[in-house]
Amino acid sequence: MNNKPIIIIAGEPYSIFFEIYFKIFKSNFINNYNRPIILIGSKLLMTKQMKKLNYNYKINLLNPKKIDSLKINNKQINLINVNFNFKKTFDKITNKSRNYIEKCFVIALKLMKDKVGYALINGPINKKTFLNKKFFGITEYLAFKTNTKNKTTMLIYNDLLSVSPITTHLPLKNVAKEISKKKIIQNIKAIDVFYKTKLKKKPKIAISGLNPHCETNHKFSEEEKIIKPAINFLKKKKINIKGPYPADTLFFKKNLKKYDVIIGMYHDQVLAPIKTLFEFNAVNLTLGLPFIRLSPDHGPNNQMLGKNKSDPKSLIETLLFLKKIRAN
Image (cartoon, rainbow, N blue to C red; front, side, top):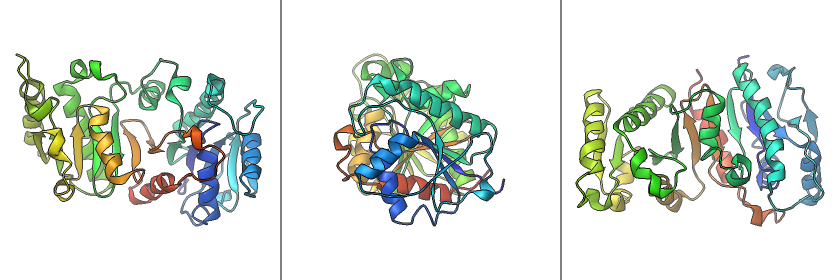
């Protein structure tokens, strides 16, 4: 199929995802999009929420075993139905959604494995209730499901500046022992390859230290023993990387023009600054999977459920980003 569809898992049933999708559909963005888009989720819940939020769109039900992208257009909402038992149209998030989301992933991963889909997007998911302490995040969950454990890299992409944490969804107390020269090299190589092959650009990369001001009074310095040796190795591989720099000054405005990607040692070291700079105008990618995987850069936002006030910007950016990158 030359025009493979984008597969979207609706995610948490009591999230803002259906609302933001309705808003994008209303704007004709979906109708004019260059690839078919297929949602995976509950038809009944979607129609109930649609009615409550005062939208009215036709739904085209699809059989996941008989997907023909040449016969699919975006004039209707294309949906693979997954049953979800519920009493309220809008409700609090509980672990009752776990099996429903798992079934959505099973269908989506089968479509990606069979090369039916072009890319996979997952809507927001409550990690605590869905993952049940078995995985740190969706990145790790998908790595396990696709046999790519310890091979994935998280990249938060924005046209002006992207970021990537070496460790992902870890408690802060565990970060230092999980940082290694091997992991830094693996992640930065993956990012460099992605930019060169998909975006046709040689990225300028900066990397932060772990400790305040890249200094420590302890005998073991992560900057000296791990980060700097990794940088020296990568430079020999002709990768454009500089650092380590103190994280508290790395996100100054002047650096937005100097670098394409900033690498941090842990999640909030780079995620907090980029969300301060761009809010939800960013895309979450997982590199290293057998397929392209993205997600909007926001959570379920359950407290806004049913209020019809949520901003669809991040999902729009996610879909626009897929237009930029080169197909395999």
